[in-house]
Image (cartoon, rainbow, N blue to C red):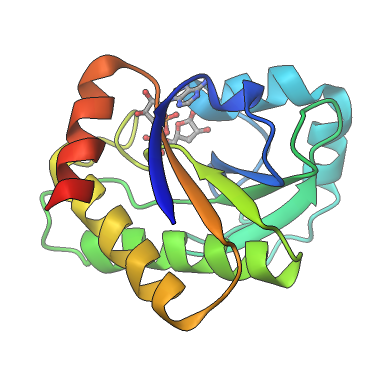
Amino acid sequence: MIDVVQADITTLDVDAVVNAANQRMLGGGGVDGAIHRAAGPELLAACRAVPEVAPGVRCPTGEARVTPGFRLPAEFVIHTVGPVWRGGGEGEDDLLASAYRASLAAAQAKGAQTVAFPAISTGVYGFPPQRAARIAVETVRQWQAGHDLPARVLLVAFDAASARTLRAALAA
Ligand code: APR
């Protein structure tokens, strides 16, 4: 099941929230900043403990890493890194789909029934929202066709425009 909700993702009582992080995984602005503020300082400590796979890289673009949610209602935070939009000719679509898939796989591995996604890459990273919404819906549908978990996926819009965009993609 896929639902669109308009909310601050940090308030949602789901098993896992997905964070639109960067490769360093040491926090940032946008939803990354909101999740770190709501989860508390232990989240940053947990992120620091994630091993680097390359200098300054804890989570490569398109992959996911899991930490506890600490003060969040959610038990887990699934940190994923979406692509920076560079015009569409550098595999951005596939990398965004990969970020959703890796996050879904991480949620399944943790036995999460419900997982909430922000609109990955559509803020600071500049990915066109309609194109990103289509990729999100397609990737989640594809995953759910072959897996029981997560049973419920929330696509979270932070504002009304994003909610319209996500709902249109879901209705397509
Ligand atoms: N709840 C839900 N959605 C939110 C929230 C929130 N509290 N805050 C922001 N958003 C939405 C934005 O409106 C946008 O639609 O999350 C979406 C993703 O935007 P960003 O947070 O800017 O993430 P992204 O575009 O993937 O850029 C990632 O930004 O914050 C830094 O450290 C982060 O370097 C990384 C980069």
